[in-house]
Length: 257
Length: 169
Image 1 (tube, helix red, strand yellow):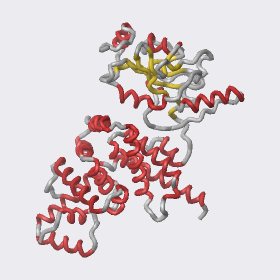
Image 2 (cartoon, chains in turn orange, cyan; image 1 turned 45 degrees about the vertical axis):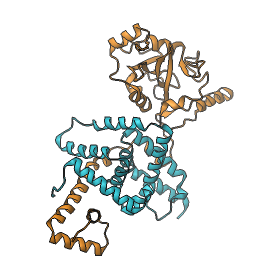
Image 3 (cartoon, one colour; image 1 turned 90 degrees about the vertical axis):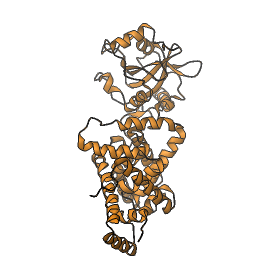
Image 4 (tube, helix red, strand yellow; image 1 turned 30 degrees about the vertical axis):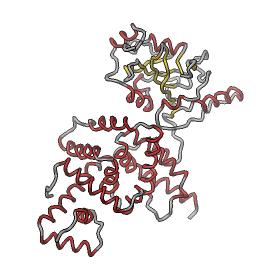
């Protein structure tokens, strides 16, 4: 009696009705090879299940728990800059505390840069650290641009309003650096040196994270979104101190260009 | 039963499902970051569409389907299938330093990562998530015969990759 492998598989998976089950069992008794094939199906089933059982006891990220409970997560939101700017303007006109409408998209941060205008950050009560260039790209200026160009991660003062995190060569060949800003809204982001400017690739906001209690280390200040952008772009290892210094020496110009 | 009570319990049921949704999403995306993003999108989507969940239907199957659709949408909007394969390769390196017992588990996972997408989905839903064939076929929007043939081919490929052909328990 021949029994297809799909039938044996279905038997091992408990998918057969009583009659078909009885037929397989009778065949197994008669033919050790059939029995061995069923055993192989069961072994594989067990191995696959075991291989994935540990994942069930992992901690579930807070943002997913919050999403399931229908609660807005307070951590590591990706900033919708247009909304944030609108909120900022409302605040300015009504004199109310800032309540930006954060939107979590949870996807590629770079796509969130669209729609940014001037004057988004109340940063240092001076000028905005970000502006659009002629091509519409978001670029760093003022203190942020200076820090990106001049500040070395290993030598920076904890009091500096910009903290540099990791610096690296991107797959495109450009130099990129992560940064965190101080202030009531304390965004962190990723900027890459392109065309003699620091173009901001990603930006996130962690409400209340860095506040008045001082900085966390630049590494820990990076949100998952920024880290993900870094992981997506980095070629090789982050620059060490000597690498940073050498890159600064050449004004962060990509060597290949 | 009043409505708020019902939806309350659905929130908690979804919380209970989260580990499985993450696991399924990792098998789909082969990248833990993408997996969590997709689960979050799916959960948010599900909560706005609770009226589409037929009571009596399995919540896990319904959620798996939303996770999968969210991933398909994500792939379309990113148009970055190429990058996903890179991520999968990086994913295979995770834990290469771990101990021998974990090596076998890892090899199951890396074998899974090498399966074609349709087979990986079928194996993931039936062998990992334990769905009956009928439910798995429903999640994947395919006839049950298609599901079983993908499952059979996926198993065969896994057997070959893991070298367990003919190995008795």
